[in-house]
Length: 59
Image (cartoon, rainbow, N blue to C red; front, side, top):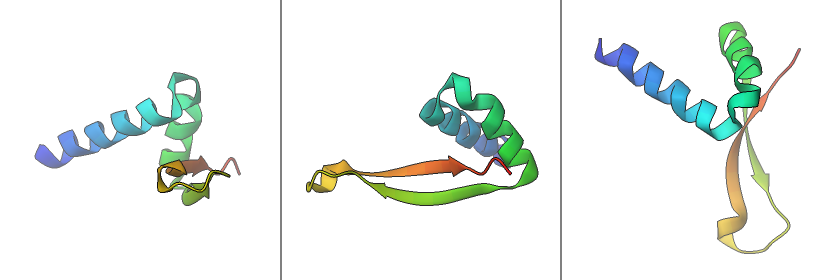
């Protein structure tokens, strides 16, 4: 039961990150197990500009 609650919380955090409009693509990627983790660095030089993002493979 706790593991399931943890999975739901993780999913909700991902939906918050990608936004409600990308929720369908996120769900499809999770079902196909095709999420790709990627670090994206913005052009600013500060360490605050580094963000961890989830890229959804649409293949």
